[in-house]
Image 1 (cartoon, rainbow, N blue to C red):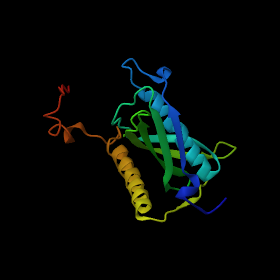
Image 2 (image 1 turned 30 degrees about the vertical axis):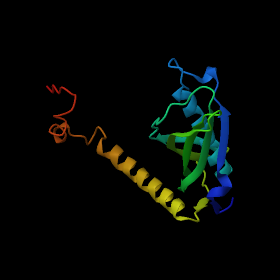
Image 3 (image 1 turned 90 degrees about the vertical axis):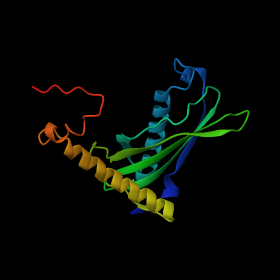
Image 4 (image 1 turned 60 degrees about the vertical axis):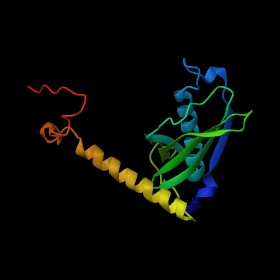
Length: 181
């Protein structure tokens, strides 16, 4: 296994024509179908980087910014933003293009945490990441802090240590009726 790999070595992109079979009841491309494509390209990118079978550990924030129409081309781009010991954060960007007008839309971006697995199913180390520009440093740092924030958030709301009283005042102006006995 190589000790470090560049971002470019594992970048992947795919383009697919959106068909009527991909649409939801509203006539737009189904978000679940797009999520499936995003997971596939994240897998391909992480597997290419690690040269191992990879699994999805988590998906961070998927915001659907613009609808995708049947008949549009959808391009997904993936690259490694962060590497830990056995995990990688894959940034995925989704764009659609109207093939008659050429107009492009950014539809969403998301971050998939992928874990490399060995033949025995256990986590295995992955190559580190070589970044060669400020954008790469920004993405790596952002992923590191996103990971730390998620750990803090999870710890803060664990059932054993959570105290409702600490949040009652904060929740007063929310759409909630609290009736604690």
